[in-house]
Image (cartoon, rainbow, N blue to C red; front, side):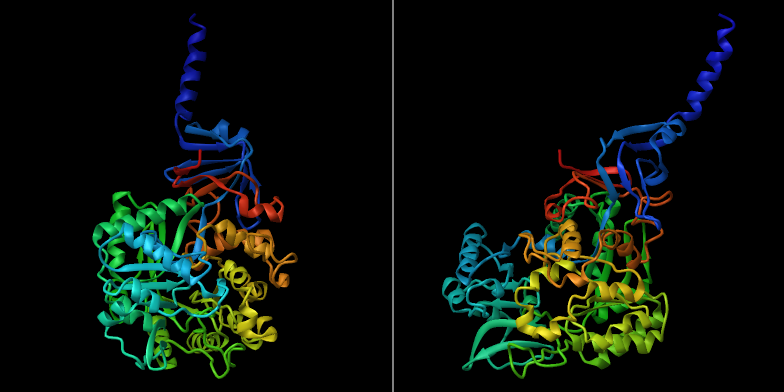
Length: 543
């Protein structure tokens, strides 16, 4: 018995040395680390919310004793997905509005609004998601039917891109809108001396500013509802573009309480009070919140003909769209943000808007730099302007599903020749060697796997067109995965803390039921998230 004591003592010491030196061990997985070499592993260890080690399960199990061990049973694991361009809060609010996405006629829109009004009997009726390009009659509707259904209750329904809306007369009266009224950077449609209810770009705000602000409870419910849906599709970080500064403290408080676990990169809207806030408080950076950018709008959207083009629209003579602010305004804010050390991200769809912003950026940035100023969307470009991205390290932040949503009608707006230099993701990737990808939800579906699919296949969810839309600008799968992980993190100055499964980074990762790197192209939209983790803690489980 005495001879056994030394052996037992050594055993106890060894156990104590290994006792719970990790929180989580994931093993028997196909781990796509998305590191610089795009290596794979079969296991990794988490401690204190961060990746501790990555490698072979046998080696890691010998070195670490984790409180929790998860056998992935061969499932593929990826870094948590990052959406580089969303309207997260607006999406959450929209979950409480009339959902008009996918409506096939103006009558379907009216039916949906009536059904909503019967369930929600007080206050404004707001809705979103209609798209006249999906209707047999591809024209903006008229408010006459809305007026007859709702003669007193105000109604405003936003187009899918958020750059146009239709309001009834009750809403227009509250906003004081008159026939023939004009506004810079927008349009109040008047036909034969009468308002049609159609408002484009800056005109929309005249009415929406009359809608009462959401209560604190509505705001919290919206953020948490958006988070729930985003976790279910594997998103662990979202860039919310164009918020008021008042949302910063709201979001920070919910994160501090632990209710809002989503990591968020906030861009403040291009308004005077937001500049005052940003310059007073400087960059805000916590593990879950990053505030350092202003989001400006150069023009509107192609679908509502608000995109600013160098030449007239192919389907509307003598109409080029418009800038939403003067070039002088953009020059002023660019200089101000550069001097302050902040990021500028500008929505630019049309080739004229893109040229205007690229030249303004270039005049301030003056060549290669690491300011990571962004052009959001960068959809339609004059071929000779593309090099300005690379020359001045300007980041094109693109949304692949825009290409597959617009492809049915974009040629009618632009003509065949101009379409060739639209949605040119591969050409844009070559400019700086990296390309952040997003969705622009709720304009598009929130699912980042649809982003991945659209980027690599250039098809809609039905597999159309057979050979892909302009397949010469498809991305390979490695680059598409980088676009929704490490490159999206880099666009936010966060590539050293997230976007890949590497030691020292946050343990944000997602488990899928099939491998997006090997599945057939047609299978990609059907692949589902089974689990989502943030800080090594499970926030979604499909079960």
